[in-house]
Amino acid sequence: MPRCKECKEKFEAKFFLQKYCMKKTECIAASKVINQKKIVKGIENLSEKQPTHANWIQVYQKIFNKYIRLRDKGKPCACCNRALGSDYDAGHAYSVAMFPNLRFDEDNVHGQRKDCNSKDDQTEYQLYLFKRIGKMANQKLVEKKNDLLKISIPEIQERIIYYKNLIKILSK
Image (cartoon, rainbow, N blue to C red; front, side, top):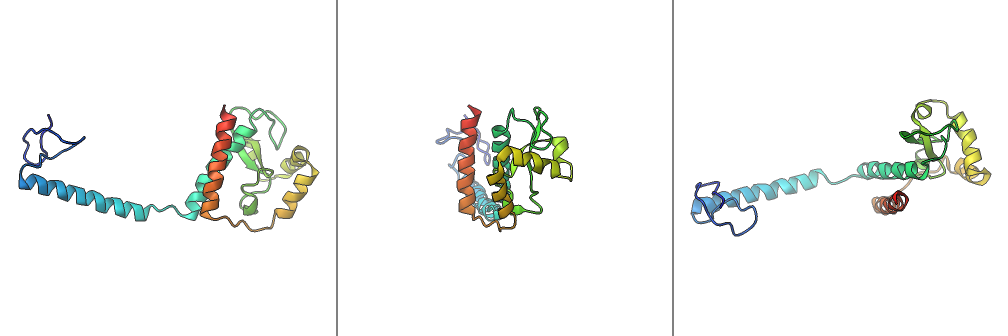
């Protein structure tokens, strides 16, 4: 039997993790104050931690990169054509900084060795990319380079679900 946090007497709990006996007025009052503080704190946390568009983009990027790593597992590096090894990146042929609209384009992102991904020069990557995805897909990438990336939070959430499902399929 637990002890009341207020009066320190043993009592029979009526619900899981009950901390107050609820027999004395001071115990009931202490219980209500604690519960009110929890409710207020919960509301404050809710308003502070409302995910922003940028938060959703970060989540989407992690899921998308995980999918790319699984998709390209066992393939050679998109940049140097050597084996990827066990720890590799989801590298972008056209950088996210310069072309943010291609950030989530599967034709633009491929398994890439960490040492290749840290290079500033992406010319080798773009040569191998042409061989890997073909002329048509490469041409579409070049055409889309300067488009704007406009994606709403509901669209991001849908895509996250889509890629999580693909990850489940590839993980089997």
